[in-house]
Length: 118
Image (cartoon, rainbow, N blue to C red; front, top):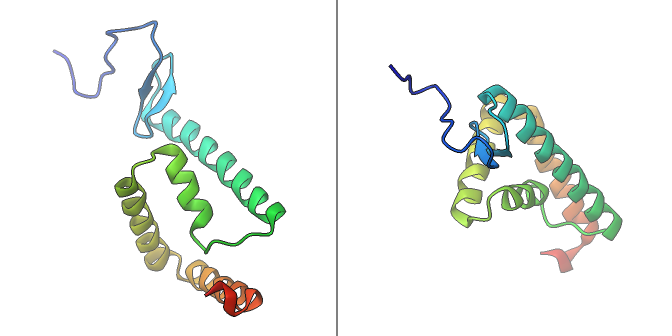
């Protein structure tokens, strides 16, 4: 009997995406490992975007780095919009202080940029 949790081994030598994070791999991995690999890639991309924006002295809003990471992971606008909405819900429900800090930093940044940024 095959359980739905078992990994298919149809094409054992081909790279494929696996796990709940759908990471590319050429070997069988667990969901937990896919999250670990996927999260590491997302964090690396996020840090690169934040550094690049800082070097360019640009500011696109509080969600800009997150939006760019999501777009790099999956370029679908609908996917990006849904992930941002989930992020906002998690932030406001479970991390209200972080949400407040992000909004305060956003207001401060907009004031620094002046009326041309509006």
